[in-house]
Amino acid sequence: MMPTSDSAFITALHLVLDLDPTLLAIVALSLQVSLAAVLIAALVGLPLGAALALWRFPGRGLVIVVLNALMGLPPVVAGLAVYLLLSRAGPLGQFGLLFTPGAMVIAQVVLILPIIAALTRQQIEELHGEYAEQLASLGLSRPRRIPTLLWDARFGLLTVILAGFGRASAEVGAVMMVGGNIDGVTRVMTTAIVLETGKGNLALALGLGLVLLVLVTLINGAAHLLGETARRRLG
Amino acid sequence: MNDLSHTGIISPLTFEAVSVSHRGQPLLHPLDLRLSGCRRTLVMGPNGAGKSLLLRLAHGLLPPSGGRIRWEGSTPRQAMVFQRPVLLRRSALANLTYALAVNGTPRRQRQALAMEALDHFGLASLARRPARVLSGGEQQRLALARAWLLRPQVLFLDEPTAALDPAAIKAVEAAVLDFHRRGTRIVMTSHDLHQARRLADEVILLNGGRLVEQSDAATFFREPRSDEGRAFLRGERVW
Image (cartoon, rainbow over all chains, first blue to last red; front, side, top):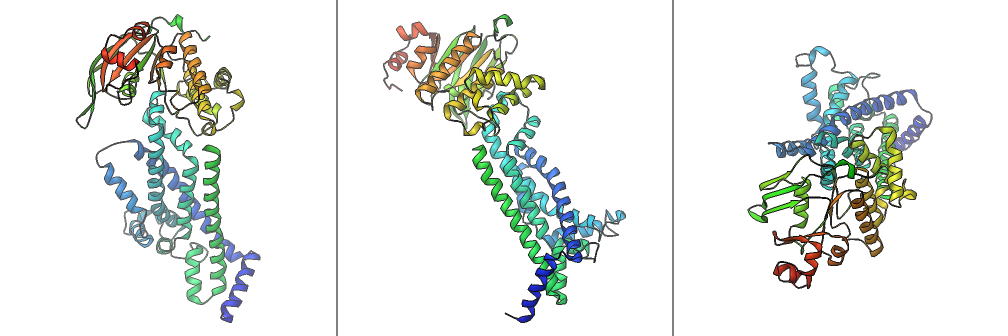
């Protein structure tokens, strides 16, 4: 192993364990941006997905195909679209959001809203297939079925939300373009890793990489535990 | 409090030339039918005769392809119990309070009413258990308890005992008679002749999507009016 990266790894561990303020600030901003994006995407995506699962209308198939396709939207394309919207000359330029954390939240919402809506649609449609006759027998209209279905799919939907959070926090292209990676303002873990690696500051990059890795592992662990709990408790 | 007889006569339900077809394939040929009084009607026939279809049409879960289904008078309160009980992913108790919430029972009364129903069906000790880990028999009793809380004037049951062991079957049959004593019209499908003898006071026999006969149970089991009825009683396959 190269001595430089070896010592960089030691320094990185020190940065993490000593709670280095620069590193902490970057981690905190990352979490704020991604949590805000997930919250917004869930508030919109869960009811949207459920409604799409319950209603039949012309063009529904097309909407579902587009939604599924958007799940794989390349982050740089999402970033470009949001950039154009928010730039001075763009339709939303007057709000001056470009190169602020707000712009990063918007970009991440654009990325994960299709994921949450599309996966919610799948899960709710499957559950409704099972529940439909019973709920109809109880005299429940379609709008009133949505809260019931969302609640009964809760474990699966939490996994969906975690998947969205994982994608948001690990993404680099979109937030780089609309955030600008400004030190202390819009610098998050992924963009900082890119920058510090480019500058040769491997210690900070590695430290942030470690934090990101732990975070992603925790998310997947939580998703796995949720699935197990649901199987055990709900049958 | 459980007596429904004071609510008066339950509206008769009439089928007028009701038919169902799927992708041009007739599943139910045009039939006329009248369900009235506070009877225990068993809908019988071999698999694929259209029993479940008839029940779903009557309960309004399915629109007919042709003909008309109507209640002669006000639409009664109804409930349905399915062959495989559909229970929510919540506790046994929460499944019952949910049904009460849906039908507009005030929040503070729900818990007590639900516990009473659980007790009535011998499920009180399982109140906090997730409904979907209960045994098949317990799940069906929970579905019956849910129907019980809705105080239906008409109860539809679609092969409610098909997947159960003898003890659980006995419990379901006792519950059906319980409903009837409370003044509920029973409309139930079954392919079990012994069960029909125990429960029915009226029999509807279907075969191949056609109504073969509708008779008093006593008449049907003594001397069916149709050849198919006689063959069905002998356990022969003429279909």
